[in-house]
Length: 293
Image (cartoon, rainbow, N blue to C red; front, side, top):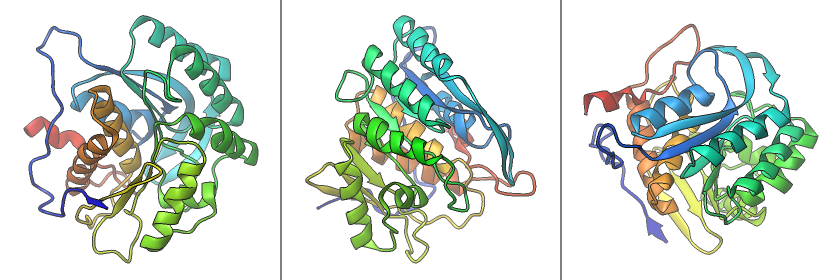
């Protein structure tokens, strides 16, 4: 068992990623996900963290959502062939060091993303790492994806993931395991890894009976525990997207998966500690602290 960074102060300095001099081409990454019209999650959160991490972010839009701080009231999926075409167009020209997925909306979109990934060398042990943030549960834990899309997620997308980063509701939908303690957290990590991902991260932010936020990273043989202080805030919209985006940025800088997760956990913990209210519901995590460093 290895132990990650301890709890410490939420205001401790967060190690930053390397940056190239202005005028030189920075590291490039891609987010393949849906928009958030309220600006707190989805591609919006990804782009905010990616920019503040000092990378050049590219996108393949998979869905346009209608949402605010109170929830999602509708979404419009992008045609699968258009999602895949965005990936091919960008990666063949600009090139990327890593990518992440978010809301993919349908089984057809998931299949198109997986097929395009094979063409451009993304995920599946290929040259470009792929972080899968399997957005399939609402903030209330309800299933967002149809059963056929869940099947594609399990049998096609997860097997090409370098790392999967579900929240606990998504863990339950994917594996059937309700994570309530360390034993069930380990069981969920094993089941996720068995689906084919190289690494599985079972996050503990929603383990409300814990005084800290214990995440568990698993590569099929070894568990790595990463802990951080629990932030007492109701403004945590986009936390999962922000974490996965920060991991993606670190992987593009050739960080190992454990080191990328350590960096991202420190990043999102700091962003939670300065989250702000917005609208009548849940405000977003706030990586804008980076502007004061």
